[in-house]
Image (cartoon, rainbow, N blue to C red; front, side, top):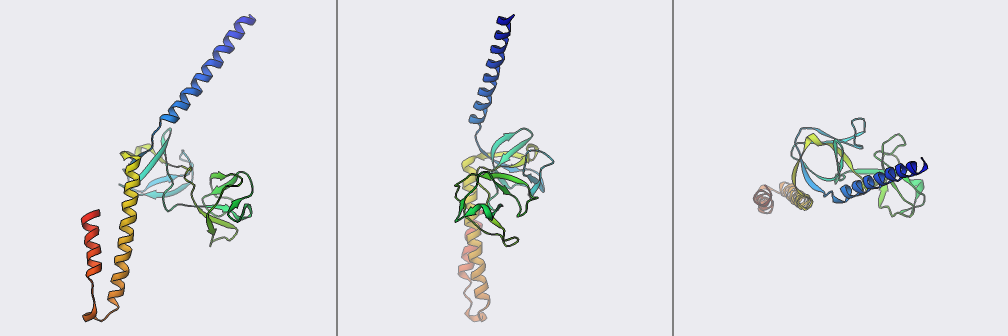
Length: 210
């Protein structure tokens, strides 16, 4: 009987190890990819379930970087304009002086926790204008937000997302430049206006980025 029990325990232990190894291999094999939003006003959540806090909504054809498989949801990289908050008491000279400091979506203790900072982590942030007891920071790159799988479709590998984000940044810079040039020219008398530089910027955007 003892021998049988030992054999059963050994088999259960072996099965557990195999399962853990398989899960580890699946996680290691997962490759990030670019996905396109297929619906309108698609909700981005703080967790992989419908009860999680809604962070924002994305429009059709917007791109996201998928980082993990979370059942019925895809885990995506934080959006470039996403902000997070940490309590200032734990940050001294941009260094975290406590362990497991909560990162929250909003500057209050009732807000959703989306991650944690470790002791001695370096934090680059600014004092929150809404509540000066909090520090506003960029969402750490290891944090995931979540989108229901039914609203995403494959759009390319992970480098495609990086490329498109770079192009988006370039367009925004060109638009801002053209806008300020146009504003400056509009303040001049009509016969002194030189709109060619602004027109050239808009032409470049249309030709290279549309």
